[in-house]
Picture 1 (cartoon, rainbow, N blue to C red):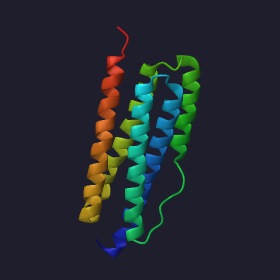
Picture 2: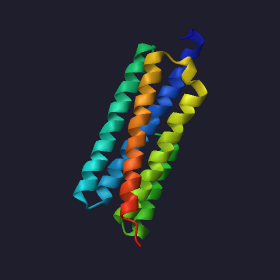
Picture 3: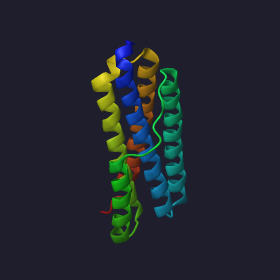
Length: 155
């Protein structure tokens, strides 16, 4: 990796940290909204996946002498606020909660794909593999949330 690319790589890794922080906050909110214990467990596991992602990304930032960000994104804060307002009107049913979670997973996946498309080639092999593994975990989470949401779809 060239020295001139460290700044771009650090920005990309920090962007992914922010996305994972937003993902954790979204799943914590979803966990509070549902009464379904199985969904609560799922939401906890998906939030733990993002915690793992953050630690892995932070480790890579430290290795290239950069500091991980310490906040979530403004769009993420708006999304959580919207989820609160929507919950007031939708009755907090599990289908709506899962739909909101799927929306958040789609945003996370889009951000991972953007990093892959824009700067992945400038990162070292370790970082490339890490991002691909994390994207795979998020894809699995997205697909599971979508399947559960579809199973709850009202006829």
